[in-house]
Length: 447
Image 1 (cartoon, one colour):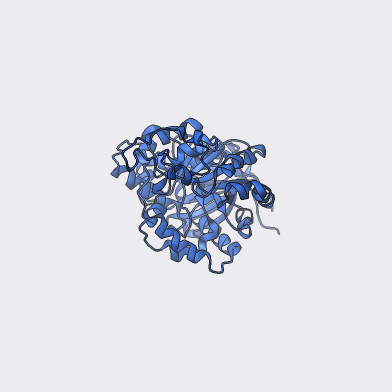
Image 2 (cartoon, helix red, strand yellow):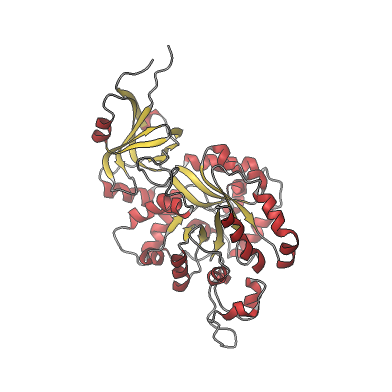
């Protein structure tokens, strides 16, 4: 006799958090063929399946959409010795990073290990920045969602015009289109003006996505006055035909890196940035005006020795935010919930006192990341629990009995609590039988 199977699985839990609907006490999500069939109170979901065969998995804890890591470098998973240190700034960290990077690495294997750790932590989709082509298939190989962004850096204008564009086009053709592909112009200080002008066009002509580091290093911030006291707030630097961001600064202009890339047409709704630490109110307003989300990576910033991101300002101003772990070369783990907790602590320290903080940070770790990559809508949408969306789920072990207490427990102490991860309806990580009970229910079962 063959194993008893059911076309539909009901995942139920004490708390279900859909993100695009109010949290549900004693809720359930029905899944069929890798997509969400029903979401609601458990009794209602079961009623909708009357006469249909299904198996119920009753999870202990809270059921969320799969987490979305909006900024990582999976290939650097083997560089944890760098990320376990503490540095005095970006250049200090970069020195340690470059030394380790020059050592022999199996980028494919290390990226695969990063993908495995991410799944265990409840992550189902990732914005993965790929520097070495061997790591390009990590998302596809692991069955994860998200986008692999080919990183482009260290191109000066002359070399770019001679052969850089053709080289990047050849490299981009090697990036898997499953689950998604994009380009990552590394940062405004590592690329001259010509590539920064052309890379967005290359991406947009192909319907792909952009992702770059911005506002991570202190020298990217706006400079209001020069050493001689002259006002450098003007934006006429572009009339001086400057070849690069660093050259612009050397000429005495004080525009921020955000204003610099905006003038070059990099920002837009098909682009999201990582870090956004050194941002003025005007910089943040530019991101909102262009529809560009920011992936905050607070633990990475702390390891490198940077200031914390202005998360309270982003929240008060209504800026679209997501959350990333960055890589093990600058962060203690790939557990996204640890960054959620760090952002909660930072927001409160910065004076954010609104009662919506827990819910907004959970949304940033799910729907916010999906929005940042353009994956919150469409046929294969992620980041929320809704009918027709991809069945990506994460279960967390929480003891709280009420919705507000459960959200607080998740946000303030969620690291290490992921007990199950479901990707496209398939359970990929499971904390064991003590975490759930599985019972065939409903209509006639096929043997």
